[in-house]
Every structure is written in C-alpha cells, then in structure tokens.
Amino acid sequence: MLKTTTSNIDGHKITEYLDVVVGEAILGANIFKDLFGAIRDIVGGRSGAYEAEMGKARQIAFDEMEEKARALGANGIIGIDIDYEVVGEKGSMMMVSVSGTAIRYS
Figure 1 (cartoon, rainbow, N blue to C red):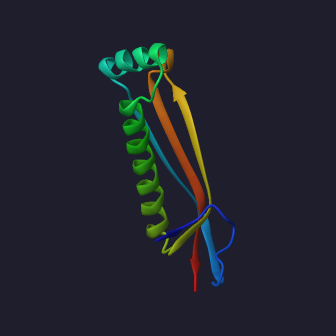
Figure 2: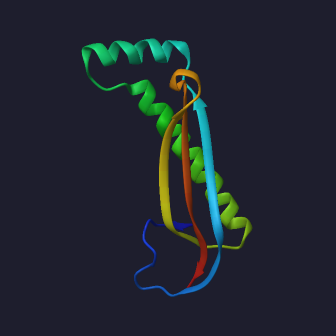
C-alpha cells in the first residue's frame, strides 16, 4: 500500500477519498531500559533500547492504520501525520499515533 505525508500522489489520480484512518501504539519501557536510559542522560549518547522501542511502536501504529485502510478497500493513504507522546506516571510509556486519509487511486 502506498503511504505518503503529502496530499496528492504525483502521476496518479485520486478516485475516491474513503475515510480518516488511525493507528496507535503505547509501549511501556521496563525498569532496566529506564535505568540505562538514565545513565545515558548523565553520560550522553544515544539510547538504543529506547530507539528500538520507538521503532517498534511506530511499526505497530503504521500496521494498524494500514489494516484499517485495507478494510475500507483503499490502495493508498495520504496526508499521514505522526505524533509521539510520553504518557503515564513519570513518563513511563511511549505512545505513537499515526493518521491519514484512506484513498483509492489509479
């Protein structure tokens, strides 16, 4: 399925706008990742554990959005927006939300 952040697809005609589709994922970071993340905050550098969790949450959200679009008969999603939030007590959970417009194009 074609996915884009733009509102059109160069070289193609959008034949039908179906509906807004959304995918969301909330993942908790375990205590060991929190501990190593805190150490990284002190000494600097990247936190591979957190990056991996963010990537996993983003993929889950995109998969969910695409599944909803397919259920509508879409072959594309345009105008995709990606949002990241930290939620929960002391920011212990990461949320990724993606949304876009499910379309049919030729």
